[in-house]
Image (cartoon, rainbow over all chains, first blue to last red; front, side, top):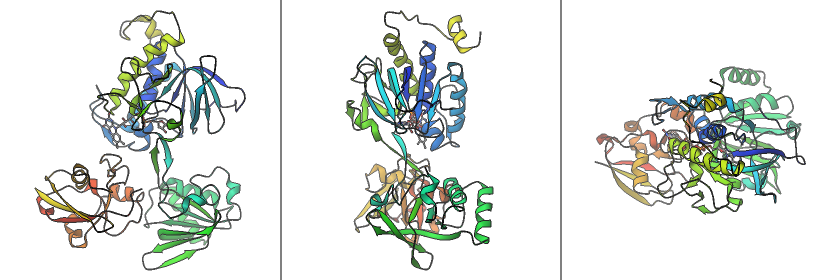
Length: 348
Length: 106
Ligand SMILES: Cc1cc2nc3c(=O)[nH]c(=O)nc-3n(C[C@H](O)[C@H](O)[C@H](O)COP(=O)(O)OP(=O)(O)OC[C@H]3O[C@@H](n4cnc5c(N)ncnc54)[C@H](O)[C@@H]3O)c2cc1C
Ligand code: FES
């Protein structure tokens, strides 16, 4: 989905850049599209849908107007279908780190992988913040992060010839157990119970490796880390009836994701208790041209509901139009009856 | 009304009144019991409402459902007595319930 041939130097130029592909960011594509504004969308997750897709894909939502019941994933899929005519470009698996003025009236944005954008308007739809891996509350773990403790595998080479401990019972833990086993010197999978949430065929493959003595499976939990100067030398593991120290020098804990405000706090926007303050006419921040919609914004009376975010996106688009097409008058139209809107939607 | 006592890791106790039908997590949030974060608001999607049910109450409260057991994988220092407090419905039967708040929610 990503068109990131352009790394670093050559920026991607766009009318609108939406930060966050949650339900509100997705609907912003729709509302901007109706007023002829093309958008690029960035999200740190590897899939669209934000909280709906990551936290509760299978749970029901009952308060989307017109949909008596829809699951988190169902709503995400429906929104993706609804915005399809507008051909937004998605850049997934990337976090926006930098947002600054470019000097020519536009905004410059840089992601953690170095992709750079120049946008006329920016829509912050960052929800509860970027999804980040949960850090086990073990004393001193920070000191090992990036050297011995990793929350994702960016380079398999970091694990070649190492004694690796993978912790968790979901797909990430299983997938990396299977992928790293051939390169690691030794690999131990640790989970609190002998029951795995991951895909059944991955569980089968993992059990086969255990049976062949290619990996070890331990049922228990971590209680302490050992090592010096960022170099991990061991992990204390408590099992049902004993506590022992495992000699490992790489640790991959997979305890799911949590939302952290992250870089949004560094963009110089006016914050109210970690939320971006906006006006309720345009949902614009105190920096003209930067809008904030959905869970990330705050104004008196704000309700963190998906439907509020949808409303905010509609008004934001009207204001964004004035910036992207200065001097051009915007006609108020219905999708039901306007042939020009229907043409944009590809239905006439 | 049922009385529920929350014991903090340092031993501090706080007893709150809960109406049958609400969850133990809601009872805690209503009275601002420290250490019950409940980031997801009770949807069994965050594991930050983790508690240890007192041994004497273990049986009456019952075991976690399969969905809750899966979510407990995301909690820390999970024990036999671990439950997600948003998944425990208060009943008159649970009057006097004692739960312990873990050292850390994460
Ligand atoms: C369990 C649960 C049940 C819920 N039930 C309901 C309900 O019934 N009805 C209802 O209306 N609401 C419900 N909500 C709330 C609803 O999910 C949120 O209001 C909604 O998801 C907000 O949408 P959003 O697009 O603003 O943000 P989010 O869904 O939070 O999406 C924001 C996205 O932005 C990304 N992001 C943030 N910062 C960056 C960055 N710097 N770079 C790249 N990406 C970034 C994040 O990774 C995330 O994917 C529920 C929430 C939960 C957790
Ligand atoms: S409040 Fe999130 S799991 Fe209980």
